Amino acid sequence: ETGLAANTRVLYSSDHGDNLGARGLWGKSNMYEDSVGVPLIMAGPEIPQGLVCREPVSLVDAFPTVLQCVGVPMAPADHDLPGTSLFEVARGVKPRQRAFSEYHATGSITGAFMIRNGAFKYVRYVGLPPQLFNLEVDPWETRDLGSDPGYSGLVADCEAELRRIVNPEAADQQAHRDQAVTAETFGGREAIIARGTYGYSPVPGIKSSHE
Image (cartoon, rainbow, N blue to C red):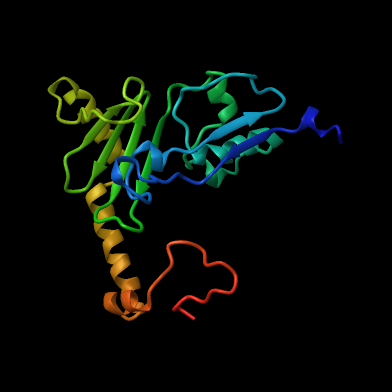
């Protein structure tokens, strides 16, 4: 109605998902697609219509995409940031991407790390055997290839790529230290448990035990 559709681009995405009972799991404390995957849809001028891009991308790609969209050059201090313009990914200008994810929050007994390399997803929980899934032939992630000798080379490559990004053991230890310090500022573990919590936003008129 306003005529803005001709020169407006839309990028639709969201936060991560939730397991919602898949595999008997609830919440988001793992790297299965139910939890780690997000929708990402683009439309508008110079964006190919009807194209489904299979390249792994990440929400960090939104920053360079917005800059390119509005014609603003990246500041010198930002050149070392991760991310690739989604316009270039969709056009096939950029080489195959690898996506990275990391999780240390609610319900985590250990740090969780993920590398997406094409159709393959490498998952590393500190202290546990690595996992590898081929999402093209196994979209429900029911067959773990991490211990399959035929994929040992790919597992080693993914582990090396992960360690180029982060030291998983060091990051896990740092997260636990930070969590312990934060817990102590609120009186310690038992005091926090005694206060109670909501796993959701309370409806209006309901007071939590924090108040």
